[in-house]
Every structure is written in structure tokens, then in C-alpha cells.
Image 1 (cartoon, rainbow, N blue to C red):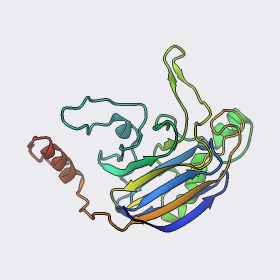
Image 2: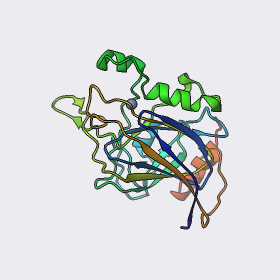
Image 3: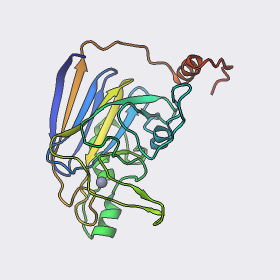
Length: 245
Ligand SMILES: [Zn+2]
């Protein structure tokens, strides 16, 4: 893999970002000072009706034949971010934190209502921050899907029947890398919640966004929803009738 950096941007505490990542390119999100959550959403850039599905992503249907099927609460290195059409938008190719897979795919986003209601603070939450960042791409507030909350430490407690919002485990400089499996539009919010939970360790800090192209990357055709599912089933020895959707 030969990486060539093509973009870099520092996103201020409580700031947002949106941009295109082409198939085969890699986006790296770095927690500059540590303990900072990043709400991250993805769209198929050729048809933005297809977008991130947190539930398809954590359901992890595409296990290797013979392996245990293990749906999880989260995703980690090697996992796909799946779309609402159940095909991969991006692959998590690297995580540097001591413990991998500490991300949340259950919580939606903080928003202005939550900030007022829980924190008594009248400021934008992640939903508004992403909405403003992505507006130049003609995506509206209502179209933003459930995110992957990168670095959010959100374990479920069976006895309590609820989630804990713990401090992130990330240290200064920890990062995660996603490779685009098709041309995607990504948007993120540098989570602004610093009043009522430990989500960001009580102190919001900047993040760094970098985009790389891999000059050794193999280019491959992006298949439509049906072709892709049939290819994956074919790898598993299943020949099924194409019924169309
Ligand atoms: Zn937030």
C-alpha cells in the first residue's frame, strides 16, 4: 500500500466536516488530544438515497463460510460499514486505540433538543452540525442516517437494562481509517456534548481529517445492489434466482 495524502483539515472542537471520498481512497480520523467522539455518516455519492445503516453494519451477515455468525453491538477493524441496501460503503482498515471496536452504533446523535433538555445549553448538537456541514451537497437535515459514533464508549449493562456513556479510551493521536468501497459522501460532527455526560471526557477538542489515495489500490467495478449480493452468495456456493427489487 502506497499512500499519498490528498487532503487534510483540522476540525475545531464542536465543528463539522463533509466531503467526497472516491472508491479506493482512505479517510483517517485522528483524535488529536484524546477522548473525543466523532459522529460519522456515509452516503453512496451516486445515489444518496442509499446511506449508512448502523443496524446492517453491526448485524454482520457476511461472515466467512464455516465461521461463527456473531452479530455485535459495534464494528471494528476489518468490518464493513453497510448501507441501507445491505452492501458495503466503507471498510474499517485500521484502528490505533489500545482496544479496537470501541464505537457506538446504537445512539443516534445529540441534537439541539437534547442539548437544551439535558444540559440546559442552547447550542447545536451533532445532528445540526452535520446538517450544516452537508447542506452544500444538497442533503437535508431529515435525510441524515443513524451514525457510527466513532470512539464513543457506550457499553450495555444487562442488570441496569441501559447503556453507560463512559469516557472514550482514545489517547492523543489515536486514529481510525476507513476505505471507500464506492464513491461516497461522508459527513461528521466533532461531538459538542461537554455538559451532561462523560461522552467526550467533559472537554471537547479538535480532530484531524486526512484523505489518502492508495496508488497501489486495485480498482474494481461497483456492482449494483443485486449483482453484489449474487456475487457474495456465489462465493458461498449459493446460486439463487434473481427476482429483482
Ligand atoms: Zn454529539
